[in-house]
Amino acid sequence: MPLAPAGAATAGDPRPLVIVLLGPTASGKTDLGIELAEHFDLAVLSVDSRQLYAEMDLGTAKPTPEQRRRVRHELLDLRRPDQPINLQEFRILASEAIAREHARRGVALLVGGSGLYLQALIQGLEPPRVPPQPALRAQLTALGQPTCHQLLSQADPEAAARIAPADAVRTQRALEVLYASGQPLSSQQSRNPPPWRVLELGLNPADLHQRIARRTGLLYDAGLVAETERLIGRYGSTLPLLDTIGYGEARSLLQGSLSEAEARALTEQRTRQFAKRQRTWFRRQHQPHWLGQADQAGDLPQQARQTIAAVLR
Image (tube, rainbow, N blue to C red):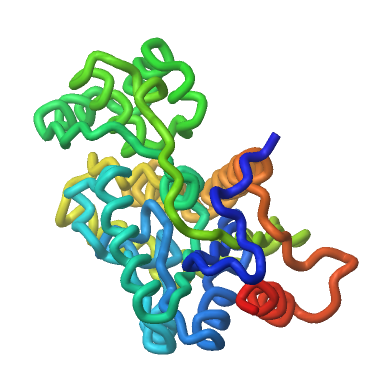
């Protein structure tokens, strides 16, 4: 049974509103989020676990400079790629950004596809307060992601089931919490719902596979391999964030283990798999108003504006 967002929005409720635009990768969240931000005079608060790192622009499909000139974007470029930010730290920064928007407009707009980060904000998921352990992270990086995820599967299978096998950042964080506290991450997360009402809008286009194929081609054509080469030059080829979809294949291309055609095909395949996991998460953990359904009139921006306006009355 999906978890309804704490304080689901209804018209006439005086509490500040948080609008959440969620959906799998390549579903069109960035463009629609910008249109809604322009229409309602809002900032776009990004909830993406990779876009919060500077210098990782193409591979994370970060809003372009032109898009960022159209409306103000926050929660991007918070750290360098070699300075991981954990969920608790992100939650604090995001809550501060939401509070600023509530003080300015009474409404905040979250846009993103990182399910656990969204859950921490709108359902009050509170991760354990374990500080970063740089020495341990260095040891885990040296072990390699396959070994680390296997260790997590043995020690905390519930957390491992929620974390993709290639997600080195979250795998390391779960092991960090386990080794530092002696208790698995899955047993330490509590909930403290925030004092907001929440309106979730969901995107789940029928042509998602075609969108993923198109975006994969655009990323490579725009210079993904060159961006990956710059990151390797600055931070080394073992940087955990380079295991991210797109960067991992571009790194293999640079190392000569994949041709460009193979790298593009593998990136597209991994992105489809990731999108499938996102769809499953949103279906089980959220109850959004899905936009673009067959019985709905008007285009997506119009549907979204009408839904938001009805709540703001």
